[in-house]
Image 1: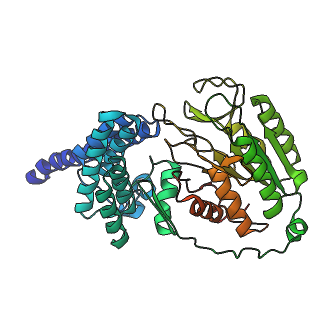
Image 2: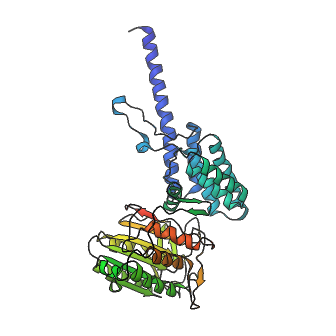
Image 3: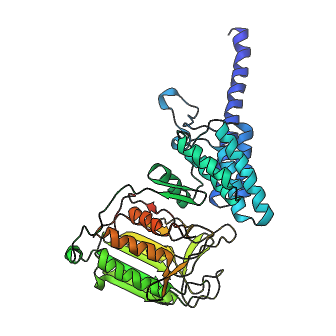
Length: 432
């Protein structure tokens, strides 16, 4: 063998091994950071993304091909973008959410600077604008927030990022920027994409269209001890009247739980699930106290004394499972306060089985409000918006996203901001 060729081979092998080791290093750091982010260990996740940056500096909007023969080229993480800088800034933002006082402000300031750096580099995507504006909102910098909103509305939002660690609510809100809903830093602009003319269904027609495939579980706990939802029982009665009058639900298929214990909620849900046919529709509306413990959402019965224990609680997923066994389509609405405790909040659990769409009456960290009716009794602000929207949209199959947009429109002048629905294995135009 030629001497030069012999000396070249070890060098080539060494370079190939070095490149493989280098590639493995950034992948290992990045994937470790993703795992930490999913566990909501934001400081560890940020460090992991910073470590990945040390090996591979710049974010990449396109898919990353892995080493291998051109005939069998594979993409890293099924073609996901590589976004360590964006996600490091996102982790800093989430650290701000979980911190308090001056520490919280420092995190938001750092995250805002990092998001703006990415925008200056030309990484113009809706996610980056969204969280930059969210930081500005948390810093009470109205001028900066408005500047970011204006830039976003005038930009071509082509840059893609890895959204794996983002919450379903964040993904839903961000996706709205491309489908008629702009949700940035607490500022929502609603532009309905579908119009249903009020009164298009004649009186009595809903009852004729109604059948035994649609069922409802309504829970209103006014006497809960964890948070103040004194308007819950009135709210749930109004919802019952609304869905039977305007949404085609037969009164015989509606189960109502007022000031129920955890056992009563479970028993009623099970009895209703036994009646639901295969592939039926289930409407769930809960007004009361909800908590998130160890990453799982719970509904509080009236006997629950504390928000840090599962005593007197019903797991939200356990209720879903009862109906998921029937292959039912579940449309769930929650009017509950959502304090952030140790970085967790009610509604942050992602359902893992079933066809589910769910929405929250307010954003994480906020409380639900009430409004006084003409009869002098109070109902939840979201309930009033929701039932008013149903009366206008009136139909046997109403798109969930549409009614939520309309409900927001009804309460947009208030202090409460509902979330955009999160859909699990269900198209986002699904109707209840």
